[in-house]
Length: 390
Image (tube, rainbow, N blue to C red; front, top):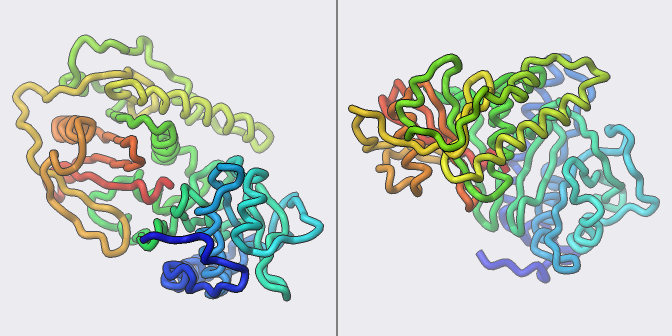
């Protein structure tokens, strides 16, 4: 759909961007359900619930702002629906800004760094940007610009270091609503369940959540990449790798493994998280090298630039099940050629031959696929999860 940002002014109703009003009931229902459940469970310090019209206004203003430019730059902004009293150490604007695209675009350079949100709250004069915050409560409704015309509605898990949970992704007039029930399907990998938000904040240091952070970092470098996660203390994975491995790591690199086993005190948490992020980015960066990074389930780095080969005596992979965890998504059975390029084919073959392994594939265009063996389907299952990683 071709959209003209000049169509918007401060008085334009929410239906100026049709997808905003269409998806607002879904977003409102999601946050209402989760906040009500959290209160029943006795949780405190929760975010406020935006009203239906407020959701539509937030999405529309952010969408039109994403199509504008400030000195040639795309506005990378994140809006959080909360009053200042729900934040820690907020930065106040003496004169709040109206929630309208031009105002958002002008302030965008000040808030484009990771972790900074524009705080938005209703006032008698309408929805206003009151300032910025780095700390938001659990289930706070956040609207983020991923790229021009591409928005993500998400919420906080309740921890400082974890990946936000995506609720809806809007690209122009295309809307994808994340299907929370996907985690209950047979053979849903724990990595996908974690991306859908079905884990506790305390579990963010566990293995599956470190894989989430590795996946996000792999996708961020934009070169495409392949990571193989193989069982610890097993060498059978080498039967599916061309020998010798050019970039074999001996002894295995253990920094990430040691960090994930550490239990930092509250006073040491910030430094530990910084060290963890650096280790994750270093390992994920190796996926930019041609070939695969090999990591074991204890997070010891074994090799990078490894070339995958069909295991001797194994048959070529012929069929792959493909799903995307969004509402209305249909499972499909495809041939490897229909799924992607050589990375996808190599990953599918590796998992077909090494059924206790998982393969993570990032494409240069932002697509991200998790390959795992499905005993229920008796074939390789490709989970397309880029919607969850934005």
